[in-house]
Image (cartoon, rainbow, N blue to C red):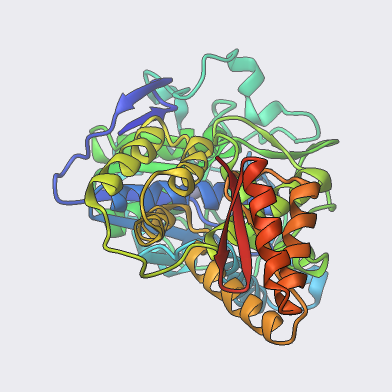
Length: 483
Ligand code: AMP
Ligand code: ZN
């Protein structure tokens, strides 16, 4: 598999460090609010990566943090702890907020078929790990104590900016608009490893440390949690593109200074979901959640399909019209799969291999999910039996996570019930096209059959055949194709 590596800015052949396991780390949510569907785009694409690695035979261990302390309102270690802000907004304790929004996050993930990582670790569980790392960084001169906080000294590194060739001044986090400069820092990009002093004395969660009672910085949490569960090296680290700087840049700085060697080989960054007026973000106040989509009548999996239809390294613009299109596509796809007849023969291995080759070629090319979705339509059109088609769709769905077989089975049941009550008759076009005239004739034939006027029903079938349309009766409907 070729996977783009943000660190080298190239697609590279993916080879894990250890043949028996892929070590994967994902930056998890800061649980001070609901995840918005932009955050969830990142988690959907990371889920696809994990599932595809498993699909092609790797054993994956995936770890994710839950940020429940230390993430300040500015990524440049300025401002208030987001958790505290959330707690105040809702007149609850930080722990209550953390529990509520952690549960809400996993409930949203479940609705989007995002698998829960093998290890999920709240940042507040690993204080001893951060203290161990920071102690060594202090001992080796990579960190310093100033004004009550412990900072990482970025001037000690030969190369600090790993992900981009931007102008260093543009990236100076201490001087961004609206952010006050921290005069304790020796260099503008130095970052806090441990806080004992912040402007907000009411910080709820604090722990004892060699540098005084305080709390960890956000960046050290991901390094510590990763090392706790995955050891001293990492194959893939994922996150949204906004995490590349400063968060991931700082993670690399502190981890490699601590370990004395390279830490992570691949960096996978998902581009943002934007609205027509800019990046979807929690701080802007206006953001969309999975629950809101459901309230508006959307199946969350239509949103998953919407995300899969574009490449993760391109930003994606959300609009209701785009989501409507994805929902229609999803419903049509399910209807076509529902029209397949299970058990109409044995699984044709040669067809399975041919179809899988195309699917894998798409995903092997830096997770081209939109081509992988197209491969679903190849399965429907492939000259083989329905049993094989259903088998292959089930295999592909282990990666795509669209509940294709479950939804199709439910659709079949629904059609069965509607047929009994006489309310609905499914007309499925095998090519996916719609043709009102053909549909009208099929309905007329169905009406004739119901009225036991079989001569008329046969006449309509012959007429369609003469027009190049072949009909097949299916349970509770009919499908048609051009011949
Ligand atoms: P947070 O909960 O803010 O720490 O963010 C959780 C994840 O969502 C991180 O990996 C972010 O990089 C990512 N993220 C934030 N905003 C967006 C967005 N608009 N589109 C896609 N991913 C995002
Ligand atoms: Zn992180």
